[in-house]
Image (cartoon, rainbow, N blue to C red; front, side, top):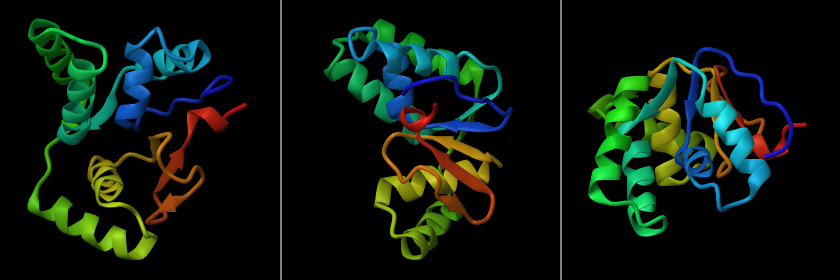
Length: 144
């Protein structure tokens, strides 16, 4: 992650960006950019993202259960949270076929589309890929 990242109101944030924001001990430039991205109001996430973030914070950052509970509460307070539904799961299946996405990445994209996001910040997917003529995947690492 390098440079400033524009932030429209309808951005879906993947777990890797949240983890850079939480972990100061990783790459400092990526940490600062991720912090700037997640500081904006009105962010979009899914329960999958919350699960992935909490799992990694518990295992890798040694967060306590109390800290993890605060993170979960903060997600629900600050973000619009999309819960995975039958429709999202079926849309993810179609996206996997159409865009050759992994199982987990297709769920993220389907949830982002369901939340009407136009930007999906993620380091795990092809930056610049446009999904369904609506959602643009943006890797903050490739921003100048």
